[in-house]
Image 1 (cartoon, rainbow, N blue to C red):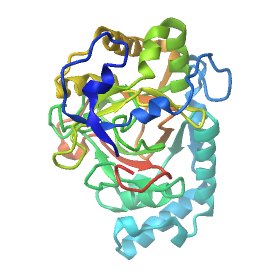
Image 2 (cartoon, one colour; image 1 turned 180 degrees about the vertical axis):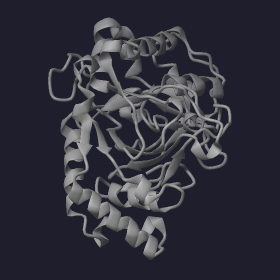
Image 3 (tube, rainbow, N blue to C red; image 1 turned 60 degrees about the horizontal axis):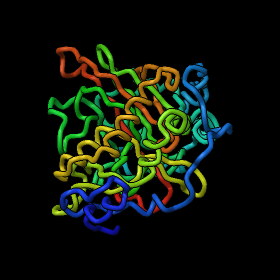
Image 4 (cartoon, rainbow, N blue to C red; image 1 turned 60 degrees about the vertical axis):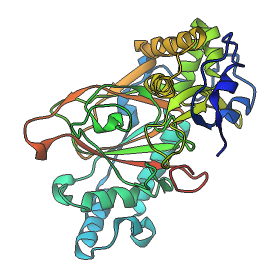
Amino acid sequence: MPIRSAAATESGTGAGSAPPPVPECLDLSAEAAAGSRLTDPKDGSTAWLGADVDPSTCVVRLGDDALDEIRALAERFRAAPHPVFLRSPDDHPLDAVREVYRRVESFLDHGLGVAVIDRLPLDEIGDDGETARAVFWTIGRILARPVAQKWDGTMLYDVTDTGRNFGYGVRGSWTNVELVFHVDNAFGAAVPRYVGLMCIRPAREGGTSRFLNLHSLHDRLLERHPRALERLWRPLLFDRQAEHAPHAPRVAWAPVFSLDGGRLRARTNPNIIRKGYDVAGVAMDKETRTAVEALEEAVSDDDLRFEMPLERGQIQYLENQRVAHYRSTFTDGDDPAAKRMLVRMWHREEGLPTYEG
C-alpha cells in the first residue's frame, strides 16, 4: 500500500494553504480519483429513509428445521473438540440454515442492507465457552469469507466494555461510550463488506443500535451542504487506531465518499477523522472542519435513521459499505459475568483475508 506525506497532498484541496508537515500516512487517496462523483440524488434501490422503515421487516426467523440443525451442530462440536477456525459449514448438514442465509444475503444486497437472525437457542447451546462462538463462526461462513478484524489476525472479536478509556489504540467497541454513525474499519486499507454481531448478553441499559443509509446521507448533504460534500469526496486524515505494523504510519489519507464500479461507498466516522488530525498534529483548515461538522449534522437527522435493539441470541448483519451504524452508551450490572457481550465477524471476498487485505 502506498505511503507518503499528507502535507504535500492536502495543499491541493483548495483550503488555501498547506498544513504543517505531518508524519507519513497510509495513502488511500486513489479512491478519490476512481470515478466521477455523484451529482444528482438517486431514486433507485439503495436509498431509503429511516422514517419509512418498519424494523420488523429486517428480521429473519429461524424455523424449526434450522433450529434443529443448529442444536445438532452444537452437539457435534461439544462431542468432538476442534479448532474453531477450522470449522466449516461444508462439513455439516445445514440445508435449512443455508436457506436462512440466502434470505439474509438478499436483505443485505437488495433490501435495506440490515438483517437480524432471530435467534440462536443460547440457553441450550451455552454461552460460557467456545460452542456458541464455533456455531456463529461456522454458519457465518455461509454468508461470505471471514477476514481479520485486527492487524494481529484476530478473526472473532469480542465487543464488550473492558473498562479502558476510549483513545488512541483503544477502539470504542472496547468501551461503553456512544459510537456515532460510522462504518467499521473506516480507516483501514480494506473495508469489510459485511459485519455480523452475535449477542450473547445485552447491556442492563442502553446499547441500542441505529442504522442509516449512506446513499441517503450523501443526498442529504448534496441538498443542504453541497460545498461540504465536495470536500468529503477528497482525502482527509483518519486515525488508524494503532491497527498497523510497528513503526507504520499512524494515520490514513482517504476520502469519505468514493465510487467503486459506479457504486457509492463511504468511509464515514467523524470521530476518527478528528482524531486523525490530532494524531498527525495538524490543525483542520476551515473547509475541512466545516465539512466534518456538516457530516455530523446530517447524521443527526431523525428521519434518516431507524433503531432496533439487539437481543440475546440474535445475530445482526449489515452491509458495511451501504449502511452506517450507531450504538448508544450503555450501563452494565455489577456482576462481571452478566456484562454486555457481543461477538463480531467481518466478511469480505476481495483481496486476502488478512487485516490489510
